[in-house]
Image (cartoon, rainbow, N blue to C red; front, side):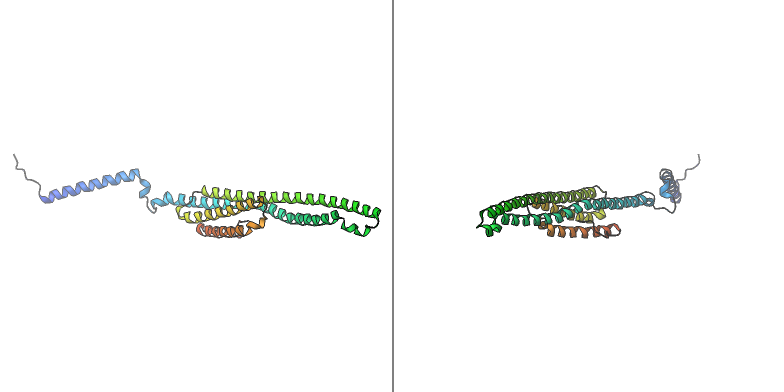
Length: 249
């Protein structure tokens, strides 16, 4: 029987190295079969998956934001026109009613007939004429007051429509899948819109309680200015041009 010579340390090391090489080759073969795209030259893994989809997502966010902003701006035009027309007409109707009230008092008193006091026939005729004029003026005053009430109702409706448009914009912004990097700008704009809507809601309440629309004009202007600032901030954050005419009232 031939003698058995145990492998030397050098031979054992070579065998171990060979098994390691075989193992590495087997692992690389599995990776190449299972994930060929990850080994393709000249491409980062993110470039083939997350890269374009991220660009597409950001483009969708920007286009959606611009669309809802455009809708909001379009929604403001009709109620603002109604408010402007109602406010102008209200001033006319109030002046008309005040003039009628003064004229009614003068005609109803019959003071214009004092010069005919010594002539009963002329005096009575004068009083009758004055009372008829007073009745006509009173009727016109009532018409003016009714028109003024209708104008206030139109103001309330216009203000409420603007408040509704602000609420709709806020809800639409909440539905956009914003990147986390935009969260601060979105939160600031949402908060400013909330204050803006609140100013309009208070103005509607004031109008209902008989206060003029000018009562809330300062609050609306301040809140609108804050919204305009945040819209510019949003444009900067998204890398788009700021609105040339900020879509506030």
